[in-house]
Image (cartoon, rainbow, N blue to C red; front, side):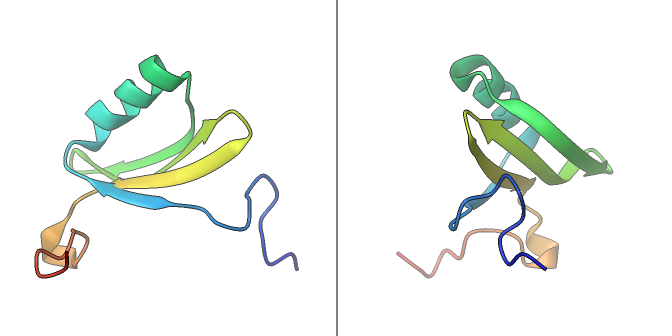
Length: 75
């Protein structure tokens, strides 16, 4: 088993954003990103895998009730 999945680099950012669909559209327009996969539930993006050039990152909508949001106590 490969510790780093094919297509990924040794460090892969995962973003929690407010407005995931808008963010994906922005990355597509602004950076020519390819949305490789997208899982939505109840109008929220639970997980999206995005390719820009030869790099991948992942993204999800903030879901504070599930602990998926920036911590306002951290700076």
